[in-house]
Amino acid sequence: MCSHFTQDFLPEKNIEESLHKVTLRRYEKCGHKKFLLKEGYKSVDECKVHKEGCNELNQCFPTTQSKIFQCDKYVKVCHKFSHLKAHKIRHADKKPFKCKECGKSFCMLLHLIQHKRIHATVKFYKCKECGKVYNRSSTFTTHKRIHTGEKPYKCEECGKAFNQSTNLTRHKRIHTAEKPYKCEECGKAFNQSSILSKHKKTHTGEKPYKYKECGKAFNRSSNLTTHKIIHTGEKPYKCEECGKAFHQSSKLAKHKKIHTGEKPYKCEDCCRAFTDSATLTRHKRIHTGEKPYKYEDCGKAFTYSTTLTRHKIIHTGEKPYKYKDCGKALNESSMLTTHKKIHTGEKPYKCEQCGKAFTDSATLTRRKRIHTGEKPYKCEDCGKAFTDSAILTRCKRIHTGEKPYRCEECGKAFTDSATLHKHKRIHTGETPYKCEDCGKAFNESSTLTAHKRIHTGETPYKCEECGKAFNHSLHLTTHKRIHTGEKPYKCEEYGKAFSQSSSLTKRKIIYTGEQPYKCEECDKAFNLSASLIKNKKIHTREKLYKTRK
Image 1 (tube, rainbow, N blue to C red):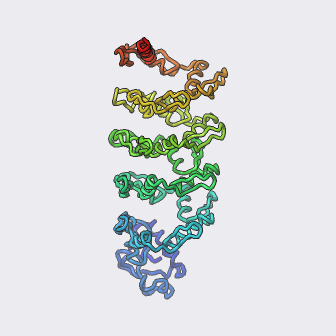
Image 2: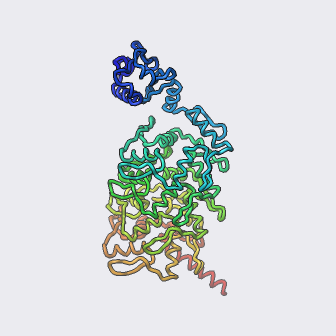
């Protein structure tokens, strides 16, 4: 390439070399020396092919393509000014072409035209296998591979195959760790442009996708589509192995790995393996301590966006998910799904070790850890390890003394929302969990489960030291301390330690003289709940005696 081109139009060496390669690759048959450009031009846009160039070169550059246009931001060569203009729009992040039908915006008119076919009644390509219709031959070709199982695009690094070239390109970035898409706001980098676009909405708070039925808004069209299915109850994606249906294809793909046992994503820190990259990314934050999701009102930060969403609801008190049959309102869609199973009695997740079935996969995972003895969550303060991340969080709060969940009724504070929720039932008197055998009702499901064992005589929790068995895991934990001599609950006032938290609470009440348990019948106050119960029985016996008289 001649010196006029390199000196006058490409001041940066790396851009010069890149454009040199790009141009030669496209027009390599013309040769290196024969590619000449006129002198005296200030920009590549003005530069024309020199007339003294060979005939072969002129054949490569028709009169309609006699100009070279270069993008300032990236090394991209265009031969039409319209092409360059369209290319630059992508970098500017502008989407001037809007669909009147659904409001979706595009950076190019061509993309809008292609999109409009979705709304058009005429659809050209129909799949004989499943009857699905497509308006593009390329999309139809890709779809057919779902039925045939064809995966022509293979990764040379790990051998994994894909049905789309774009999926292979994205996958390669896992190996190279390349993240070419960077957020100008916070500097965070991503391996996909679509993820960057989604991330940007975190800063702007933009939620352009609104559902007319309930008024809920979303920052992604895919989230709106998923949300719609909650209302319709549609689950179009079915597992051929077990018949289970899902409302998202990604959920089905994830579920299939349960059957195959495939866990391709491995953590380098603890060697733990996962079925998908997103779970691995979230898991890594346990090691790094990264908490990228911050709530501006209280300044609290979280490792997961879902935890931030749940936390926000604590402040607003919003419970948008309501079950029609019993009218119960919940603050999470996952809780609604789990609650539905109480009514249906459905327990699809079964433990192969002991045969016990559960309503959700998370509980099954925790159950499996009882059998394997795995405790992946370790407290850095006391070295204690746990099977559940939630228990680790509670343990950490014991050390810090943090109690973020406060009862509005009596002002009592708790380390976790579940304990607060249970505590509230003391004030409301709500006992939603009833025993079918004796009719006794409880304010906790775990208490009902433990109570049922009185009727069945089941004692599944056995002490390895002395062989004594218990009907509750908590009783076993407390019992083990007899053998170990462990007393984790220490009184800060007098330094005395206890094996049970209830013993410490009782001791504190004795020191303070506090009597929080009051009898409504005689206004007498007690420092222990057990004493209040005994007092209530006196009143009950008195009433019975008077009735008999």
